[in-house]
Image (cartoon, chains in turn blue, yellow, brown, purple):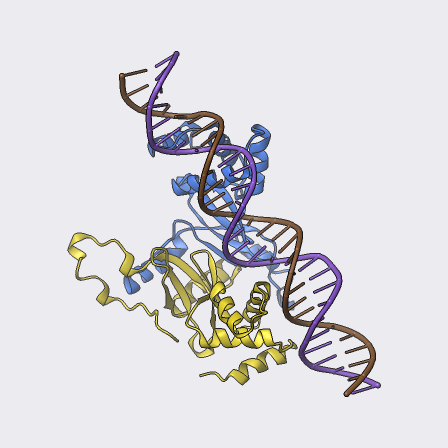
Length: 160
Length: 160
DNA sequence: TTTCTTTTTGCAATGAGTTGCAAATACTTG
DNA sequence: CAAGTATTTGCAACTCATTGCAAAAAGAAA
């Protein structure tokens, strides 16, 4: 696990100040589950520091994202955040029906990425990428398929 | 060019009413340039029909998107819309720097699409897809590259 | 054409997220 | 450890987009 001190160092190195608000938001995200909603982060942070302001949470998460500490995931049109694990970077597939977020290895986007760069000189933002759709579990199944469904697929929604 | 009457028929066929507001928004989008911002649509529509309400424009564009008349493009976190040309469907690459939107043939996403379906049973929403990034013109160039740049790439930003 | 039902509109209120600004505070330097 | 300054916070106002609801209007039926 990435040490908390190391995370703080990232902020310090880039010249950002270590305010109580930032320390708390960082801890909340580091200890929270994957892709937490902003409101969740806010409530947790507020219970540790009652003066916490929602605008500060937004600004702090934006800063953390900018320096790469956290990853932003748009789930059902709301922003969610999770700690960035440098050794387990992944994209997300977000289900439009159940709002579940499933991990997707960067490997699946490598080819797409090179194509855009080579053919159009367009450099896509693929640090993190979220694709919406419908997951196996929520997918309407044809009659013959019923009961055969989900077991053949691996959708990693588990903790990192 | 797709006839205006045909577009109206699409609405009628699905049981939607033809209100003056809808006719005007449709004409504005049909005659406007590619990917218009909602505010642009609103202003144009309002000048043709002064009682036009912004909420109506939003609702109307959402409806049009739902029935496939228009395509939604998120440009720099604002929603834009353009008339759907059934014979020229395309995705968009949106430049984070200049906010330009460039067309991308669906062909480039076919493989990615099948991979998600086959490996994860996840059905991605790929009717229309927008990828952010930096276009050739805004891309920082290494010294040797200067002056060699953009001519080798085709970025289609033109009218459809 | 008139009446009826259902959809749609306009308006005002709401929600997520951002921003301007004065007051507060983290870090720097002496 | 005191003073200075540049960043950050809290608050309120604001933006884009959505929604609840009563009044208006479209289309169907008589």
